[in-house]
Length: 475
Image (cartoon, rainbow, N blue to C red; front, side, top):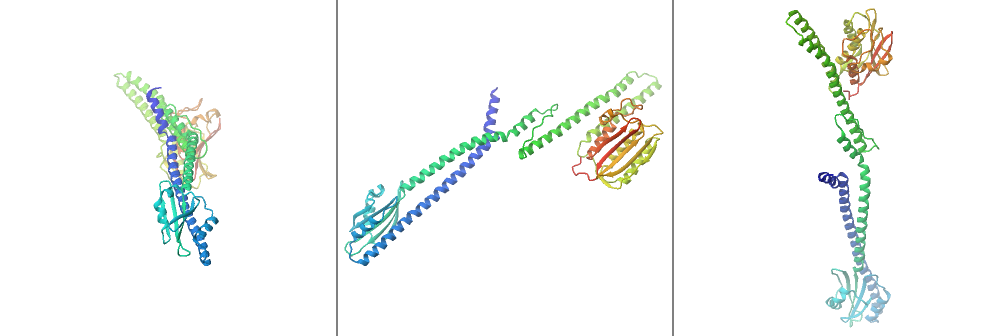
């Protein structure tokens, strides 16, 4: 394997559709997860702040209620008030209560204050001397302490201060741990999901790789490959569309190949005749006149052949038909009038349909005249030829029936092929065997079909069956 092939292989891996899908998935999931983790953290932080404030308000409210009861007694000292309250209230996690009497530290619950607060002597001194309630917050890199301090005075001689505070250090640690766990779990999910998507994506995109491989293998001599359709999703629809495109390509290549083969095969004989006569052409004026007549006749035959082959090639083009509304009754009469001029036979109209169809009048006339000419060539003067039209099962039938020699069963299928002629026929056609192929092409362009009924010695009936309501996608 060359370096270029190696590079192309790695490029498909890193820039392939499956890789891009996974990269976009990981990017979107990372963004959404980041936003989710940030939002959850913010919500938890707000709830933590609200809880901290509620704890302070609740403790101060309970202390004030106890303080009001002591003032009604008017006989207790402030240290009894502090002792009583601290003994009744057990602090929750992160909660601290500190008391001061006469500007000096008295008691705390729990006794061990937060490290941040214990080192801040100035804050403790400021609390011990307040004369009005204060609320505040002390923020450090590792902690966030909220406090509520109120002055207390029972007898007017020993002023005190009660301070309740709440530290969020432990909650912040838990919040950080939860955040880390969420990030790790998300990363693990992303890795697992990426592996699953890579495997599933390979199966889902397999039809696309088959499309690519099939497209690379297509050539003018190989358009027969098709891809199996699985499921009913967008990729299955794409596969069906691709197969339909291959069908059209195969039909186009087949038509082109047939045209080349047919033209080469059938033009070889008249060209040989013309060349032979021109090579033997002498100086005798009478001989030159005969040779010129032969050459002209062969050129006319070649011209008719080329026109017929071009007509068959055009039959597969979208603009082959010029559709118009056709009155079948009037059209049948026109066909009969034109057919009678083709030969001295017993011509008759069997029936006429009364309906309107959407069709190409000229092409249908050409098809029916080909059938009538074919009937003349395979009948005798005493034979009869019948034309007619009828409506049956929402379809219109045109037919040409004769009482001639008939067509053998073994020949009935192949006579619609190009250059096909009935073997062992008593009468030989002057054409190239393209007439019935042209009839079939014209009828199929109208989304119809051709049927043949024949017995040896009893004649033949050719039926052209067309839909009365022609679909809009007609060729």
